[in-house]
Amino acid sequence: MIATAAFCFHPQPRATLLLTVALPCLIGLGLWQLDRAHEREAAERLLEARMEMPAIVLPAVIVDAESLRERHVTAAGHYQPNRQFFLDNRVRHGQAGYEVITPLRLAGSDMTVLVNRGWVPAPADRRQLPVVATPEGIVAVDGIAVVPPPWTFSLARPGEGWEPVWQHLDLDRFQALTGMRLQPAVVRLSPQSAGGGFARDWPRADAGATRNLSYAVQWFGFAVAAVVLWIGSAVKRTPS
Image (cartoon, rainbow, N blue to C red; front, side):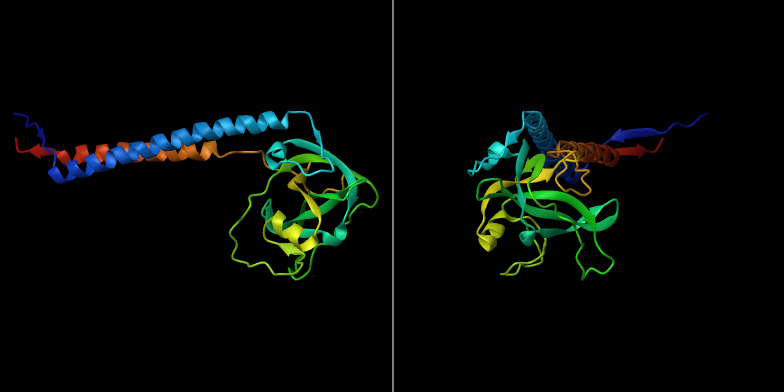
């Protein structure tokens, strides 16, 4: 005679209550992340479409920041190396360095736009600054207009005076320190531009939809795991 195992399904009240509370929360978080992913996918498509629009020639009057965001822009003027600064903690291919930010005064006006000329490696002695060449005379630049966030948390408190190394882009601070009339966007110099650039393999504009999709998968995975654990705790083997 062959003995066979018998099983019964007997959910535990405490486990059932926990599942009843947790499962809607986990599924809700997953659905929320899916909604965020869809919103960001739409934002990515909008950014890509704006980048494909005809280039804007930066004018001598201040324009709305949103009209410039992620647009292809061109400008001509004189670099102002006396107000050039370096953005710290910029890593490229595992090497520490800086991004070089140089003001460009637009030709025939007192309007200025900041130009991100690209990445340079940091010297072995971090007390020293990179030595970078800056073109003289009229310089033509083209690139993508980037609108920096209005505030970024930083453990390093900026000084009250001018500093050659900054932790993040702060257009309001730059304008307050220099008194320059400033466009509300930074030109991220394109790799093809001859505007005195450095390493410029800029990352693709990404609104973060992929990250939200991965979070959604995780939350749904937690929901499935919770159900599996609940079933496992409810199935009992009975003596044959």
